[in-house]
Image (cartoon, rainbow, N blue to C red; front, side, top):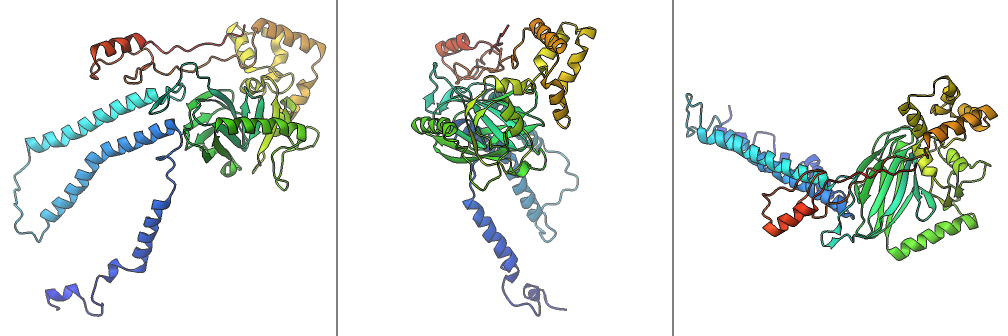
Length: 444
């Protein structure tokens, strides 16, 4: 046998801690060091909403580490203190209870859970994507008369369509927004559920066919960023990405002018060698985005380059949400209005074909309803007169930002009185803390 000292340097093994400095360990340490160069956009974003969400991640992680770090340290300390070779460790086989230890074990996690609950409750209301933002950044409050830039987002297979109703333009796989201006996104999908996500701007929001979701955000820095789909949606999902640019107001106005001019010049904003979806006449899409062009654009295609439309047909987005872009197709809002009135019985039996939303059978359905006969036209006119609905006449789910962000209030909840505000400030907060009303858009 070898003496105990020889265990430090067994025969045939060179002296020194070579097992700690082998190539695999060194390469692992080198790869770990390269992580410091990664772009942690989630924790260092360009938008105030995303920054608040990043702060929430850091706060939550820090609170949880208050328990994780001591527990992991205690595991190491106990293992070292009570190791078999430590003859000085006190051996107490009959010890089974410690009031002090029980208080520490239960009180510390309870306090952390309470803190996490409070942070979660406040941030859930403050960062509600349906709530309008209350500030541009932590130093700049949002002007009361500030008008948001509205962008209508449609998730297609497998590309993104952005419609700017105020500017009357649309783009594919290109999102350009001005810095320092509140943004309001209305999001839907043409077929399957998807997820709209620009990490530098705000969290992901799902896009679903026949439904509309909302997102309010702001960009505080100029630059180029990436947006993508965060929900698997089929073969072209991995390339379902779009360029996002945050520019100054002057550059945004210049870009809008370029998009509008592109229709007159026949420029679609695409590279010459890139595949472009064909239009109704076989020509590349661009110019005016009407319903016929949209139906062509909606067909599945992958790796689609940037396409710009200098004009957009009125109420196209509303028709997309209402699933009635095809000619002669009944809108879901009309169908729901009929159901709410008890149905039409036999008189409305021909409308069933107009309600079909089978993607694979779309061509047959379109052909069947493209040129309805006189009876069907009269019936459809009568149905719409009965419903008195316009496609897209859906309730506006936007929630107003709180008037006083020092004491965040949920919808219909009074301000808490234990937050240390002065009496007059608390009274003012109570006056401003009114339920967040959901306004309905009446189009009757």
